[in-house]
Each structure stands twice: as structure tokens, then as C-alpha cells.
Length: 248
Length: 171
Image 1 (cartoon, one colour):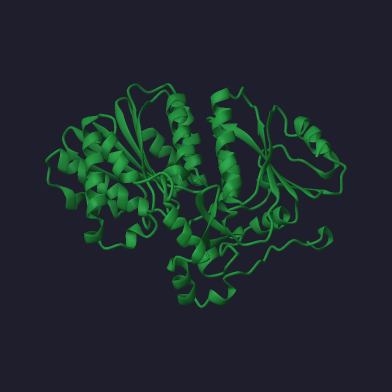
Image 2: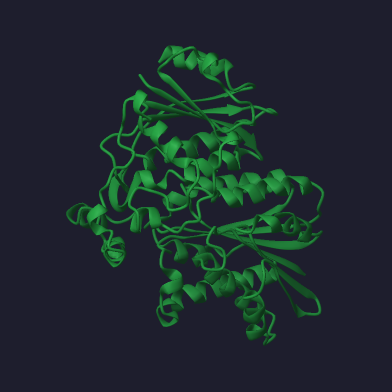
């Protein structure tokens, strides 16, 4: 099995996507009952591309779309019978531009590879999976366009700050991502129940929305960082306020 | 009505193409635009301003001066181009990090009192399938929710100018 993991976050290694890709890789190792987790983690700290031979029959390559110079190498890494896992954060209710650029690079192998399986994991800081549904539809289209096999999209809302959260507070998440890893290792579609657990809900509850209104949309997270940066007083600045055409 | 045209194709447009002093054009392929790095410092360090210097401020000011912003994009593998996505990703500082409720969903709060309506011109380098068109149209509606505005029109054309001129004269 050739496994290609694509971290589609512009933040590269300092990203929530990297936390998820490491869970996926670790889960696949567990699924294959080979205890080389530490070796993988070490390898993933290296350069733009990480490559690890987990067992004789499995090769794992990992790429970061944030590094444009490796896009072509990532495309070349996809062979017949490869399994590809693409993980990205939601930007403007779709993939980040840098990851769209990578998708455009994939066009050169469209309908030229046999039995390539595509799994996607999309995570978002918003509460509710609805923000991710539009891009999910595109991922189905993209996979078909490329002539690959669509194996599912896992959606994880509320992911902002994941990489800063203590591991012990994330056990439910990690278990769900390990479950997804088992599906990937088996070559089966993502399990529907795992997908439902990750999603949680499509739209936030009425209570949450009332809370947002009552707090003026301030959940505390961004205010805290603004204050740390001595930028809170500028919080509502409008630097691009409308000007007459002559003045710009 | 002030109209901003953000042309992300590699066919440059000029003022002469419209002969209308209410139209402002930015050709993104001939300016310096970096990718959004997702650092959020436009929210948390320099509110409303990207900390990475490039020509995006010109686009943001052009957008905010307009009543209607028209984005022009090639269609690549069934979606808008990465070039237009790059521009849209970098409109993040126009919004506020706090949250608000819009269309029954949680979105980031408006930083400004008003935003221009938005429109999209899709360039058909090859025929756009109806399913791809529907996916893009559906997604672009979501862009309007995020930007606290409305979609004025989405059209497909084989050049950046033909259908757009008609739409502009209609509005």
C-alpha cells in the first residue's frame, strides 16, 4: 500500500491539520500492528516531505501544500493503487488557495492512474458542519474529475486551537480519528457513525446563537489574544473605510 | 454605482474596456500577491491590516470603495482558480474576529458598516459542466454570507468582457 498524506494547511507544520495528520498516521500504524509510532513522529519533524516505510508492504509519504516547491513531487508520489489522504482547514468555506493550487497540479495525472483512493478531512473553527458542505460537494466532483475513487470526507467543526489543547482533553477526537485511520488502512469508506460523531451538529443550537448575540460575538478567545498583543483598543479599526475615488 | 472589477485571469483589462469612470479595475496577475498564511494577525495584532506586505491593500480599498465587486476567474478542475481563491482568502481582514449570526449560522462579525454586493464571472476555457457550475454558484452564495452581503449575479462566458459589459449596463 502506498499512502500519501497531504497537509493542506497554509500554516504547514504549525497547524491543526498537522495534529490531525499525525493522528491519522499513528492510527494507521496501530491498525497495521507495527510499533513504529515514534519513528514516524521523528520523520514528520524533518523537511518539506516526510517519507517513512512503516512495514515492507506500506510506504507513507507526507507533503505540505504550504511548500509550493513540493507540489509536483507530491503529485508524482501518487501511483497506481495509492491511497491519498488530504487534510485541510476551511478557508472561506472552501480549501485554502494554496491547496487549490495543489489540486490544479493534480490535473496532469487525471485519468492516468488506476485505483487511487481519495479520503478528505476538512476541519473548521466554526460551530456546525454546514460551513463545510459546499466544499464537500466539490471534493466529490474533483475526485470524479481526476478519475480517482472517492472514499469520503470527514468534517470536524470547532477545530481552532486544537494544536494548543492538552492531549488528555482530546481523547474523544483522537479515538474518532483512529477509527478513520482503520477505515483508511482497510481501504473502506469512512464509517458513517464516526463521521456523525465528528460532525456533532450541522447548525449551532439556538442557545449558542443567543449567547453569541448577548456577548456581542465575543467568545473571549480573540479578545484575550488582542490584549496580549496590546491591540485590543484597535480591535474595531476600519482601515479600508470607503474613500472617494480621487483619494486612493 | 461604483464597480470594482477584480480580474484574476491572465487577460488584463483596462479602463478603455469599460469607458466608465465608476469602474475600477485590478488585474491581480500583474501585482504582487502573497498567499494567506492563516496567522490571524490581521485580527489579533494589527486589526484590519495584513502583516505580510504585498499589493493586497490596493484590492481591499478598491473593494470597499465599491457598491458592487465583480470577481473574474478561470474555472480550473471544476472550481474557481487558485488565483481568485488567493484574493478571497486575503479579504479576511475586512471581517472582525468576533462572531455574529447570519442566515441562521455563525459567521464572523462585520468590521465595516456596509459591504459591496458581489458578482462572479467564470471564464469557460473549456465547457463548464452544469454540476461544476452549480457547485461554484452554491459556494459563492456562501462567500456572500461570510462577507455579509448578497450575490448580484454569476455568469459564465468565454471572455472576461462580453457578458460582463451587459451585466454592468443592466445594473
